Amino acid sequence: MKIRVCLAGATGWAGSALARGIVNTNDMEVVSAVSRKHAGRILGDALAEPKLTCQIYGTAQEALKAQACDVFFEFTKPDAAKSNVLTALENKAHVVVGTSGLTDEEYAEIASVAEKNQRGVLAVGNFALTVVLLQKFSEIAAKFIPQWEIIDYASDAKKDSPSGTVRELAHRLSQIRESELTVPLDKTLGVKETRGARMTGSQVHSVRLPSYTISAEVIFGMPDQKLTLRHDSGTSAEPYVEGSLLAIRKVSTFVGLRRGLDSVLDLR
Image (tube, rainbow, N blue to C red; front, side):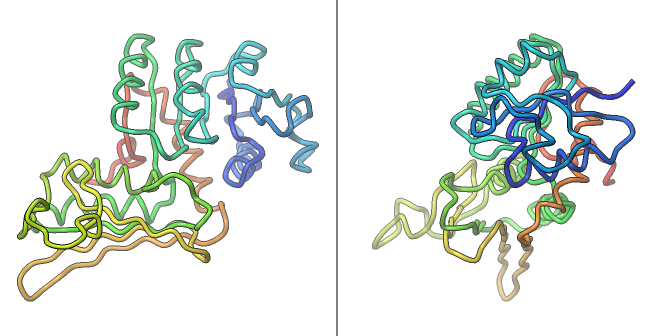
């Protein structure tokens, strides 16, 4: 039996690439889609892909009511993501979250609802393999190097700051330890904000400029040596498709919340 997917944000940059990717699989299908702009249309007409025959709805609530699904894939906007995820869980769907901007507090609430409904939620800040490796290598480095800072790069049009990629990275590093500061923030002279924001034990700096898509950089420093780990995205959404398909296949294998694609991979 195929995995039935409800895809929210199906006509967006990443969502449309994923919808086309699902068409080429043998084990899953898009049974409903969410897009305010294209509500009422057939997804295949909106994406010029005749194999996508499902209806597009204006809200997650409408889509979930009209068509049962096994996995709800959240690829919309930060202001709608939490509500969509909670609605999907209450409708007994597993959830993959690809939308950035959700806070640790919001994920704590989502985790509670997932446990209550005995469903899995897999939250992934970035589905690219290079990001998965950046996260794992950074966790290893943090075990040995006590000082680091994170730089988050994205397009000038990106409203959420930092990106979901960096939020996830900072959260994961916090599970290792907090970064050390030679000069405490309250002892900093001048404009303290230039030292970045303190997020779950890491200093984070966000750059928003034209020409960037998504980049994330972690700089680890020790006396007379430093280690720089960096991921750069291109302009295509294709690197995210394989990771997204994997997430859909894996999210039903556990109950509760997991963060990061590597949480369902064997990277030992």
